[in-house]
Length: 166
Image (cartoon, rainbow, N blue to C red; front, side, top):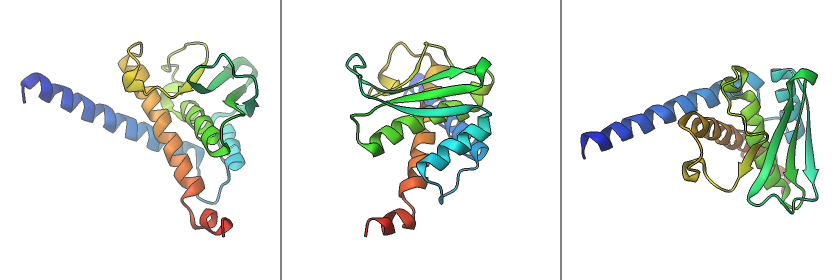
Protein backbone atom coordinates (compact mmCIF):
# COMPACT_ATOMS: atom_id res chain seq x y z
CA UNK A 1 0.00 0.00 0.00
CA UNK A 2 1.35 3.41 -0.93
CA UNK A 3 1.60 6.31 1.50
CA UNK A 4 -1.20 7.97 -0.42
CA UNK A 5 -3.51 4.94 -0.04
CA UNK A 6 -2.60 4.71 3.64
CA UNK A 7 -3.43 8.38 4.07
CA UNK A 8 -6.83 7.87 2.45
CA UNK A 9 -7.53 4.91 4.72
CA UNK A 10 -6.67 6.96 7.81
CA UNK A 11 -8.81 9.85 6.56
CA UNK A 12 -11.73 7.47 5.97
CA UNK A 13 -11.33 5.99 9.47
CA UNK A 14 -11.19 9.49 10.95
CA UNK A 15 -14.37 10.44 9.08
CA UNK A 16 -16.17 7.31 10.28
CA UNK A 17 -15.13 8.09 13.86
CA UNK A 18 -16.50 11.64 13.54
CA UNK A 19 -19.71 10.35 11.97
CA UNK A 20 -20.25 7.79 14.74
CA UNK A 21 -19.60 10.40 17.45
CA UNK A 22 -22.03 12.87 15.86
CA UNK A 23 -24.69 10.16 15.47
CA UNK A 24 -24.23 9.16 19.12
CA UNK A 25 -24.71 12.78 20.20
CA UNK A 26 -27.78 13.11 17.97
CA UNK A 27 -29.48 10.05 19.47
CA UNK A 28 -28.58 11.15 23.01
CA UNK A 29 -29.88 14.66 22.29
CA UNK A 30 -33.35 13.33 21.50
CA UNK A 31 -33.36 10.91 24.45
CA UNK A 32 -34.75 8.15 22.26
CA UNK A 33 -35.71 4.89 23.94
CA UNK A 34 -36.76 1.43 22.74
CA UNK A 35 -40.32 1.83 24.00
CA UNK A 36 -41.09 4.62 21.50
CA UNK A 37 -43.17 4.38 18.36
CA UNK A 38 -42.42 6.51 15.30
CA UNK A 39 -44.73 9.35 16.38
CA UNK A 40 -43.01 9.36 19.78
CA UNK A 41 -39.64 9.68 18.03
CA UNK A 42 -40.90 12.67 16.02
CA UNK A 43 -42.19 14.33 19.23
CA UNK A 44 -38.84 13.66 20.96
CA UNK A 45 -37.00 15.34 18.09
CA UNK A 46 -39.40 18.29 18.32
CA UNK A 47 -38.53 18.70 22.00
CA UNK A 48 -34.81 18.25 21.39
CA UNK A 49 -34.55 20.90 18.68
CA UNK A 50 -37.33 23.19 19.90
CA UNK A 51 -39.50 23.26 16.78
CA UNK A 52 -42.91 22.05 15.64
CA UNK A 53 -42.49 19.21 13.18
CA UNK A 54 -44.82 17.50 10.72
CA UNK A 55 -44.24 14.45 8.54
CA UNK A 56 -46.20 14.78 5.31
CA UNK A 57 -46.87 11.83 3.00
CA UNK A 58 -46.84 13.38 -0.47
CA UNK A 59 -49.05 11.82 -3.15
CA UNK A 60 -47.75 13.77 -6.15
CA UNK A 61 -44.09 12.84 -6.40
CA UNK A 62 -43.89 12.59 -10.18
CA UNK A 63 -40.94 14.99 -10.33
CA UNK A 64 -39.00 13.51 -7.43
CA UNK A 65 -36.75 11.13 -9.38
CA UNK A 66 -34.65 9.21 -6.82
CA UNK A 67 -35.67 11.53 -3.99
CA UNK A 68 -37.35 9.64 -1.17
CA UNK A 69 -37.73 12.47 1.33
CA UNK A 70 -36.75 16.02 2.14
CA UNK A 71 -36.78 18.47 4.99
CA UNK A 72 -37.98 22.05 4.92
CA UNK A 73 -36.96 24.12 7.91
CA UNK A 74 -38.46 27.48 8.80
CA UNK A 75 -36.22 28.45 11.71
CA UNK A 76 -37.77 31.93 12.02
CA UNK A 77 -41.19 30.28 12.61
CA UNK A 78 -39.86 27.45 14.74
CA UNK A 79 -41.24 24.76 12.48
CA UNK A 80 -40.21 22.18 9.94
CA UNK A 81 -41.80 19.58 7.73
CA UNK A 82 -40.48 16.31 6.41
CA UNK A 83 -41.94 15.19 3.12
CA UNK A 84 -41.93 11.51 2.11
CA UNK A 85 -43.55 9.57 -0.72
CA UNK A 86 -47.00 8.24 0.18
CA UNK A 87 -46.49 5.45 -2.35
CA UNK A 88 -43.58 3.97 -0.36
CA UNK A 89 -44.12 1.26 2.21
CA UNK A 90 -44.57 2.71 5.71
CA UNK A 91 -41.25 1.26 6.92
CA UNK A 92 -39.38 2.78 4.00
CA UNK A 93 -40.97 6.21 4.36
CA UNK A 94 -40.30 6.13 8.12
CA UNK A 95 -36.66 5.39 7.36
CA UNK A 96 -36.54 8.30 4.90
CA UNK A 97 -38.14 10.56 7.52
CA UNK A 98 -35.71 9.27 10.16
CA UNK A 99 -32.83 10.29 7.90
CA UNK A 100 -34.22 13.84 7.88
CA UNK A 101 -34.67 13.70 11.67
CA UNK A 102 -30.97 12.85 11.77
CA UNK A 103 -30.18 16.10 9.96
CA UNK A 104 -32.21 18.04 12.54
CA UNK A 105 -30.50 16.30 15.46
CA UNK A 106 -26.96 16.55 14.09
CA UNK A 107 -24.92 19.05 16.08
CA UNK A 108 -23.41 20.37 12.83
CA UNK A 109 -26.92 21.45 11.85
CA UNK A 110 -27.15 23.49 15.04
CA UNK A 111 -23.99 25.38 14.20
CA UNK A 112 -25.17 26.16 10.69
CA UNK A 113 -22.56 23.88 9.13
CA UNK A 114 -25.17 21.80 7.33
CA UNK A 115 -25.03 22.59 3.64
CA UNK A 116 -27.93 24.38 2.07
CA UNK A 117 -29.43 23.11 -1.18
CA UNK A 118 -32.94 24.36 -0.62
CA UNK A 119 -34.34 21.06 0.57
CA UNK A 120 -32.35 18.39 2.35
CA UNK A 121 -32.99 15.15 0.58
CA UNK A 122 -32.92 11.41 1.12
CA UNK A 123 -32.12 9.84 -2.20
CA UNK A 124 -31.38 6.30 -3.27
CA UNK A 125 -27.94 7.63 -4.29
CA UNK A 126 -25.32 7.11 -1.59
CA UNK A 127 -23.29 10.12 -0.47
CA UNK A 128 -20.12 8.39 -1.67
CA UNK A 129 -21.53 8.22 -5.21
CA UNK A 130 -22.57 11.86 -5.44
CA UNK A 131 -19.62 13.80 -6.88
CA UNK A 132 -21.26 17.15 -6.10
CA UNK A 133 -20.95 16.71 -2.33
CA UNK A 134 -18.05 18.12 -0.38
CA UNK A 135 -16.46 16.15 2.47
CA UNK A 136 -18.51 17.99 5.16
CA UNK A 137 -21.66 17.32 3.13
CA UNK A 138 -20.81 13.60 2.83
CA UNK A 139 -20.26 13.52 6.59
CA UNK A 140 -23.64 15.19 7.22
CA UNK A 141 -25.35 12.63 4.99
CA UNK A 142 -23.58 9.76 6.73
CA UNK A 143 -24.55 11.11 10.16
CA UNK A 144 -28.19 11.32 9.08
CA UNK A 145 -27.99 7.77 7.69
CA UNK A 146 -26.47 6.45 10.93
CA UNK A 147 -29.22 8.16 12.93
CA UNK A 148 -31.89 6.67 10.65
CA UNK A 149 -30.46 3.18 11.19
CA UNK A 150 -30.34 3.72 14.95
CA UNK A 151 -33.96 4.92 15.00
CA UNK A 152 -34.97 1.88 12.94
CA UNK A 153 -33.25 -0.43 15.40
CA UNK A 154 -35.09 1.26 18.27
CA UNK A 155 -38.42 0.92 16.51
CA UNK A 156 -38.14 -2.52 14.96
CA UNK A 157 -35.54 -4.59 16.78
CA UNK A 158 -37.21 -4.67 20.17
CA UNK A 159 -39.20 -7.62 21.55
CA UNK A 160 -42.42 -5.55 21.58
CA UNK A 161 -42.30 -5.25 17.77
CA UNK A 162 -41.73 -8.98 17.35
CA UNK A 163 -44.58 -9.74 19.75
CA UNK A 164 -46.97 -7.44 17.94
CA UNK A 165 -46.56 -9.53 14.78
CA UNK A 166 -47.63 -12.81 16.47
